[in-house]
Length: 199
View (cartoon, rainbow, N blue to C red):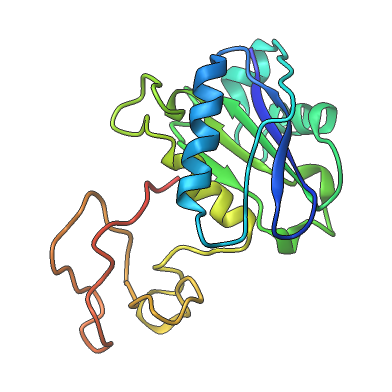
């Protein structure tokens, strides 16, 4: 079983899902995931919708796909569609790697276009079984990377973080919602109260 989403970006401001490989995800979960993405990307100019759904069954891809694995390469080589304006979003089990998800940054597209896209744990879709990560925010986090956002703690206290000027520097990732956490005391501001799940 390999579950994977794909999406098309008609213009830089209007991505929409063109197809979805998800044998282990119900249509309602897919629609709910798109709703979460649209909610989380409000005011960014990005809008997502499912255009079609396709399901592919491949136990090897589903169980073993992870960054740099032969299964990931085979999966993306066969399923990847479109150019840099297409979001390919795959869902797999990650039972062997323990990951929640990962993404390629847009800067990597030119060198390896087939590797483009986002891969998430299928059970992190809204209503999935992987609590507390079953609210659809793993896809949001990884799609953020796909559009070029970095972690808030990139480079620690001396780095650029997520390259967003109003984000305080963080030395390390935060888990949960720590109150008044300040890992870069020489820099202004407290760390973000909530960091999306790390993947």
